[in-house]
Every structure is written in structure tokens, then in C-alpha cells.
Length: 332
Image (cartoon, rainbow, N blue to C red):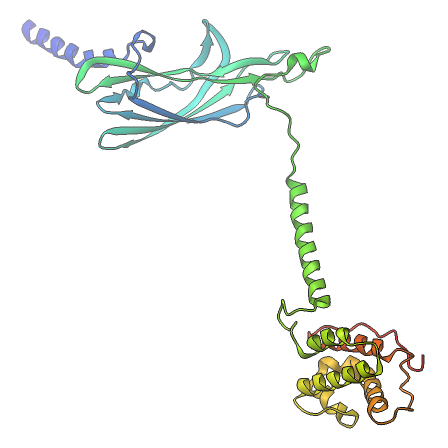
């Protein structure tokens, strides 16, 4: 019976021995050989201004190459208070979780750490998250135990309230970068203004443009308006201009347009309805130029200038725009 008990304790000891080996203090183990572990950390953007009760989250992604393997029991323990030179610094590991993804020649661990601050001081003070030590074992040699050090993250803890007079320049943390002013609102308004300006310029181009850059800009009256600007200021130039306008009206209506069938033209082309009075004035001018030289047209002393303005407003009607009101009064 005693022999059986001895054998039982011997087997129990052999079974527990490897587990106790994993509990070796990481500080006493050699470092992992170079090239075995690669690390990527996702650290918080904010490194200063933490106060008591704040939680700081950090993510560590480790890739461990074979034949080494992470001893998962060496992961940081929740509730452990960080110490510096044996003194508690007031930062506790609140939670830890990890996921594992194994590949053929390596394993990747995604470790998420959350620290909580339980300290306060009358002035800002520096602190650090970590370092954390992980144990690795060589799967081909169980006696080959090594450690890997997760680098610490330096932060600064601020007091809840400041007592007395403090010189800010002497209490600024070197971890704080330059103070930046947010320009998000200004950039938004700048983009809106640029868009509005672009639309305005496009509208002006559509209204005042002489070329066919946009749809409906290359119509008959647009071409006639360019032609009239090149004609000489003379009776012959006026006669050529009146002929060009007649041609534009006929092309637009697909028929010959005169004062006696003007109503039919306006019914077919309602865009030209605001020009009904001026169209009648144009036909009076045409009659004076071709048939009755001594007749009064009521368009002032420079009918050729009026004709150019008239064609420009017809061009606006052709583009679907409302023409500007003519400033030329009959009989002026």
C-alpha cells in the first residue's frame, strides 16, 4: 500500500513540474532571440491630461514564429497594480483579453489591455503603462524558456485641482505636442464658398458667354450676336445686322416671321414672349431700313446699338433665361 502511495505522489509531481516551470519569474529568464517576435501597438492618441478614474486602452499585436510558443498563463493579470522601484504608482490593469490566430509557421496574438488610474497629485506627474513581460517556450526544447518585454507607454497624470500658484511653463509635460486650433469648421465653409463661387462663375459664363461651351449656348441668336459686334457702325452695317436677325428668327421658327404672324411664332416659342414688344419694334426698324427710309422707328439715334442689345436678349430667351428689361424707351 505504501508503495502505491509513493508511485501516486511521484506521478503527481511529474505532472505538476512543467506547470511550475511556467511560473518562473520572467525577470530571471533570458530575452527571446532576435527575429522571433514582431510587435505592433495601437496606442491612444492622448498621452497627457489623465486624472483619477480614467481608463486607458492599449492594443498589442504580437506575431511569434515557430518553434517558440507563447505561454498564455504568463499574460498580464487583471487587478495587478503597477509598481516602480517597488512603489505602487496608482495604475491598475482593469481588464485584459486576447485572441489567437495560428498559421503554419507562426501564431498571432491580439492582446487588448485596459488600465485605470487610481492616483492623484497636486501637480502633473509622469507615469507609464507597462512594461509587460511574456514567457515563451521552445516547443522543440522544453528547457528553453525565454521572455519578451512589451515596451511601456509613457503618459502624464494631471491633478483634479491645482493648489496655489503654478507656472505653466514649468508644469508642461514634454509628452504634449504643440497646441493646435481645429480648422474643421473653417475648411467646411471654405469648401461651401468655393462651390458657391464655382456655381456663380458657371452661371455668369452661361449668361454672358459668347461661345458654345455649355448646352444651348451655341444657338442661332448667339452666333448672330457675335456677328453684329463685328459689323461697322454705318447704314450698311445696320442693314446687314437687320438681315442677320431676320435669318435668326426664321431659323428659330422654321418659317418666315413678320409682324403679321408674330403671334404664331410666340405660341410656338413661348420663351420669346417677354420680347413681344421689342419684336414689334424690330419689325418697325426693318421696315424703315428696307422700305421706308423716312419712317420713324422710335429707337433713338443709334439703332444699331439697340439692335445688338435686342439680339443679346433674344439669345437669353434662346437659352431658356429670362431676358433683362430693355432700358431703351420708344421715341427716345
